[in-house]
Image (cartoon, rainbow, N blue to C red; front, side, top):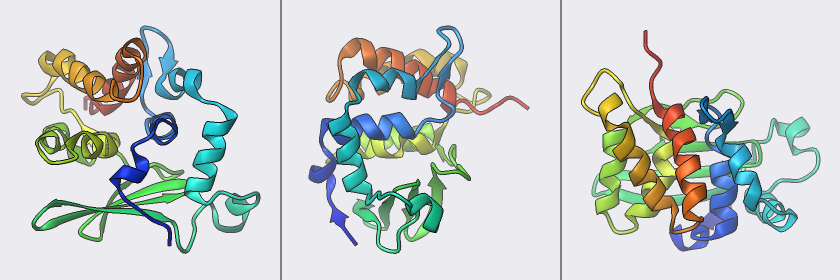
Length: 189
């Protein structure tokens, strides 16, 4: 298993790939664009090669094991005294665990929108809060019927954009954050 820490992922190649693959529902209807399309402007062959090495991708891994590795690249980090986050980066999926219980994934059987946005936002107060916030953001949801509903969308977009600006240009962050927020809003029943 390739163990990594927050310093290992604090790079443009990591975040470019992460934002490019973690928001399948991140779509801005008004602009007719999705988060992964917007991230393409920063994507290069070098960035793709970096991600392939990071995740352990090789030709045939999707056919052989549906993109899962027995020993994936793994990040373990403490969220609190009693909560540990583990993220497994497989070639075909990203799996999220809190205290060894799976809480989400981005792969073919995508399971997102499992943690209230307000809980994810609270991570910003921790040491390394920016990275933790951005790492768990794909799992966040915004319930438009609750306090953080429609009236809170603009401040949430702004907060996401501000955190992204540590890695990306401001205009890209604003556009990607619109897509991300659109994907975090729970569908109305």
